[in-house]
Amino acid sequence: MDMFKVGVTRKTYTLPYQWDGTGGVVYGPHLYFNRANSPYIVKYNLKTERVEAQISVGGYTARKNSYQWTGYSGMDLAVDEQGLWVLWGSTGNSRRLSASKIDVVRNVITQTYGLSTEPMSSMGNAFVACGVIYCIDYYGGRSTTINFALRYQDWKPMEPQHTVHKPVRRQLHGGLQPQRKSAVCLGQQASSYLSAHF
Image (cartoon, rainbow, N blue to C red; front, side, top):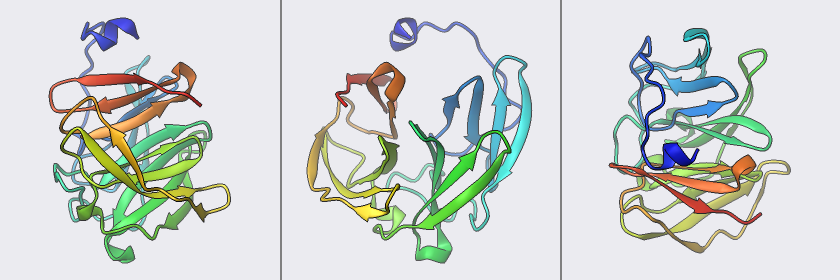
């Protein structure tokens, strides 16, 4: 991990498909990403360098919703202690965010919830951490406000009005790495890591 943080490349992969957005994640030995211009999440095995599955996100219309910064960012993948989630803009939910839980063994979506967020085009980013779905106001600048927080175990909203100070000016993807007790903020040029306390 230390070598990755300083930009040392250990291996380069040639993926079989292009992808949309910045929301790809590594979970176990797999890379999950949104196949370009499609409703599919590709499960790519990093050891065998083969596609193992394509998981369909029902109700998702490619390139019709995105975060403020656009960039074909209508689908975002996130990992927390409970597993793999996809956060996506739903035209059927007034362009608000929906959250779907993915069963990575059966390669299917098991639950989908329409969330009462602002429209996706008005938010800077969203992520899942420690059982909570978060949305932030703005992707640019050194600080932003968490404007939506929802515990998914009981689907109860939390008081989200917290300011977050970011190490990168233009945050295009954010997430938490519980095993490493660190958070990652992906910007245009590089990734930054913060220590996390939980």
